[in-house]
Image 1 (cartoon, rainbow, N blue to C red):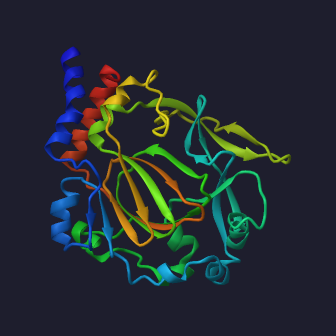
Image 2 (spheres, rainbow, N blue to C red):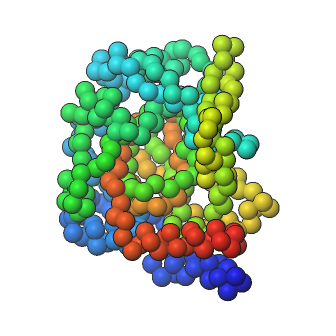
Amino acid sequence: MDAVNECLRTFPKEVRELYLNDAVPYLDGPLSPLQFYRDWIGPNKPCIIRNAFSDWPALSKWNAAYLREKVGPKVISVAVTPNGYADAVNGDRFVMPEERQMTFSSLLDIIEGKVKSSGVFYVQKQCSNLTEELPELTGDVQTHIPWMSEALGKQPDAVNFWLGEESAVTSMHKDHYENLYCVISGQKEFILLPPTDRPCIPYELYQPATYRQKEDGNFEIVDEEDSTKVPWIPLDPLNPDYERYPSYRLAKPLLCTVKAGEMLYLPSLWFHHVRQSHGCIAVNFWYDMEYDIKYNYFQLVESLTNAVGLL
């Protein structure tokens, strides 16, 4: 076990020395499908691409007045929490947001400060909500990224629309998708960690629960009955508890800000934590990852980490 632990301890450092960048690189424009696959998807490295969707009408059209006119009466799913943390650890629970049905105009009233409401509101439903709930807006964007679709030989599994308050935070997690994240207005701040930092990142099991707002405006936490425990990351990268999670000292997060008109390529299995400016609007494309030898290697590292415990 000591030998395995030492291998896991040196593994993230060796990876960074071999091929990872110290910062997220910028590209001045999209590459050919083959070159993008060779340079970024294959090596599983993030980058920020400028001028990748400069022809989208959404960049100039998507303001509050336009959205009210186009989709104001539409009823959409909005995540509501007391603290901005949806799908995150709260004490000994993994707490999901209250999913509230409301009109788009009602959400804009809250974001613009025209209506005061307790709680933090965030459009974050990740089931291709752009195409499923807001198809009226798809004419202002693309429903897939042609060069990415060609590089991967597939269409995206989901195209998601994001809009929320500054207090809305996405806790650290990973996804099994190749993710193209396009900021339309405002900016997003990402904390990124490669899959090879998994030995440094703690997971614990939590009882799943959901926020529910009571009539007095306060929120209660309601357990999900007959649910299995959920593995989640309890660590807050904005304020890491090194005493409780000393192994996180070995992690080397990459910080990047994605501004309006920029696209982040977030590779599959990269851990990420996200904040945003108030009223930021974004669209992202989830392409299912290839479950190839890299996925098996990651599963091996995860299994070894779970077997020997954190470093």
